[in-house]
Length: 328
Length: 277
Image 1 (cartoon, chains in turn cyan, purple):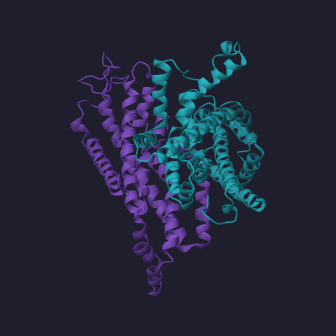
Image 2 (cartoon, chains in turn green, brown):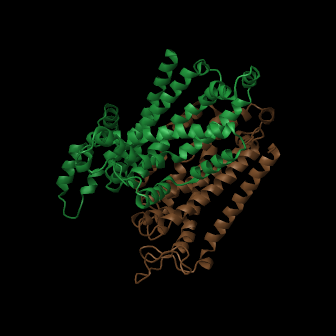
Image 3 (cartoon, rainbow over the protein chains, first blue to last red):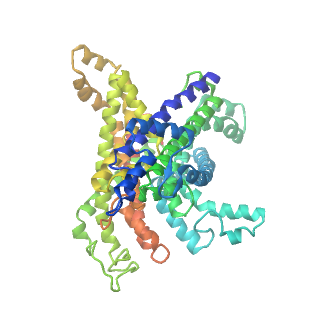
């Protein structure tokens, strides 16, 4: 296990290097540098030159590259021109909110997705199987942001079941709440965004679980378990479910990029103060240091998520560590 | 249901999806004949925010433009971007995957590491960063969508080629002294065409979704040109008092992407003999 762990962790280092290199060179493909944002007819060229000097944009490209590389691994991403403060501070404020949203979506994806997939497989070709299949098919093909708008329209505007935006009620009310009321308030604000974010992946997980479960149910050891006289419930829960779940774990890593990408849209719709919304604003303001930081962080988080999923998988299934069986 | 019935039901669904795609393409091609109104014609006096009616089957937007007409014309944009970007990414992916799988060696290492790096990025965030650097245009959109979507195909094709290159008929080709391009294009690629066509079909649907997301954020297709995503963006502001503006373009995306997924899934089942739904 230890060697596998070391090998796997070591493998992420070139990946992270590649990620930060790609970001740096893509951003420097663009003409000009961030200070061109401040350019106008009557800007003193000397001022621009000084700014370029202060931020190091007049240095040779390789030097800038190594500065960015060293900085990105230390968590220093330079100065945000849009927020007028260090990128680090902007990230520290917004990243946790995005992680809360993604974690909530992840929980929905795997609980509802797996449950729907299992029911669908156990009752193959039943009405409920067809219903789940049809629904997952539509959810998978649906633009998530549009679904979010429809949720807003129905459940927030017409039915008033859920609030339409932000993470909590306004401070003057929220501060009056007791501990439990605060929890409920937060959960109510989280519900629609998390559902919107998770919907597509939830549909995919349910399909995947169903396929995996159907495969396992056909195995000899399931027949043996049934032949032993175990109840159907025991066969499904104790024997089939555990083995069917294995490949589903790898999906955790697979769906992370979609979650972070989707968070951009969901945070825009629900005014969720996270990194995705910051990213969109940074694009409109051409705030390059912030764009680079958000891009790097989202990719690095994906790498970390994949690492966790792989390690978890190999921990549960020893065949992977020994290099047998299917690769995750 | 027996396996045959299920397969038949699947292929019927896939055929229905195919026909629906054909109708969608025809409808957007012949949009001028089918639409009662000019999609960009504004009716600011009394024509704005009209709910669906006989004259405007899907209502009008804040400039009094007819939603139905704009959906058909927007379909041209969304479908064209989907087709061209998917064609580009699938071609790129096939070439990269075939090169990596057939020649192996350093080239394979480099290509597959690039694939790993690009797959680590959330595609939407990578696209945002790319679009932000340049002035948005249709060509730019197609190019960046093509450049960010080829990795999946590359992996699939590489896997197929890795196993094909050890087969007897490829060895025979090599023994006969065929050059690598001839073996690749005449003997290997025809054999990976199945998975490539499936990937291409699914990729069109996916690209339409991503394009809609970009346009929804205001970073894709620029006004006054209509695309489904930018129409949903227009409708976002008026959601509470004019629900039809955002709702119908979203349904258009849903129906279109569903059709491409139906056809793609159907073809995958057809190509995979082990498959049982």
